Image: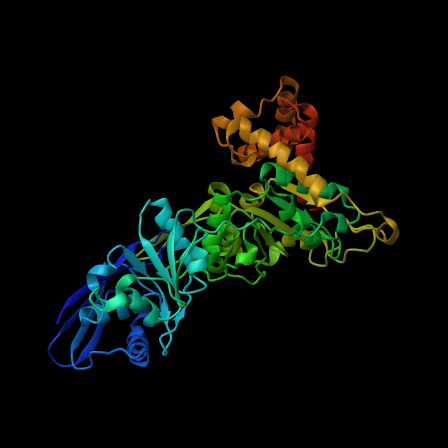
Length: 513
């Protein structure tokens, strides 16, 4: 019998390394062997492929020795995405379809026992990786996956509903009209799709009062800064955080593709969420692996799923210490590298962290409405659950006090999200025009070059930082926040008033300790 090669793709982070499915049929003791560092779900493809071929009315070579190799052999393969290429390889090696006509195509899809094709995760990530690598190929995918892949510009995507739909396109050319690769009800080429941005966010006008917290949210959105909300239970911290994504600028096509590709890796992408900035809110029992990613092969964690969006950590001190400490590097670098013994993967993690916490165990330290039951030692012990290096990496700390009942019931609606977003977008565009990035991303010499601190402001900051004992990182972060405040006001230089306001946003915890 024969040898057939069918092309497919594995998933490794946001990369899609090529996999060649080699199928060899020969005489000998009947068997079906699958090799190539395959996970359990890939090895189970033998039974799915056998049943799918038989139930589709095709001939499965029972009396032959079948060897399937997934090359390269040292690359881990998981999921059922290799079912379709394995089935096509067997059919081509047994002469039922033309193996030469498979060239120029790449296949992925899980087979049901009836031969119907089921979606696979990571289709958008695969298509985006091919686009980034400038690889020209035709992707054949199941419904549900093909629509994702077609979002990538210039992608050549074909949608097939059943194994027979694929087989019909690759029959030998001598078999009449069946070999002409014409569209059928179960086979179609999808045009590159450009979805309209339909992002909908909750309105910040729903939050009454809390002018200071809203100002901090505006600064964070304008400059890309992280934010810590500190206040008693029921003061509106979660309500504010859940409306933060609406203050961010609309996503560009590249940002939307990156965000959707990561969601696709976890199987959580939905077309109706296209160009909507994600807000990920993991429970405080989440482990370090759940937050930053892990597993074998590595999967993205919450910080990557929040890429170009918001990571909201409610009840921050209740998270495991190891999970919080794992956030240090991603907050600085905007990416996370997950290393395992056999493989390493890198995921983007350019998120904005919004965290919320109570000031103490009972929640009422510093409250004017209820008496705190905690001793000073207990308050200090509760706040010390957050390490100094982590707190130092959070740009803005703001107190969110409880509103009096009269203000809550009779206060008029606050400023709308749209009005605040307009100011945030203008300030961010001003910063990008000046330095090519947001203020939060400034590093090293860029801070001295672009903050444009005037002499009086520099003297004021020097004196204040010495009195407060700030670290070099704390000083730099205050400078970047001050530059954002200046951008919101349209000021060319960073002045004393901007530095003074920035300093106020780094004292919420210290004032309560």
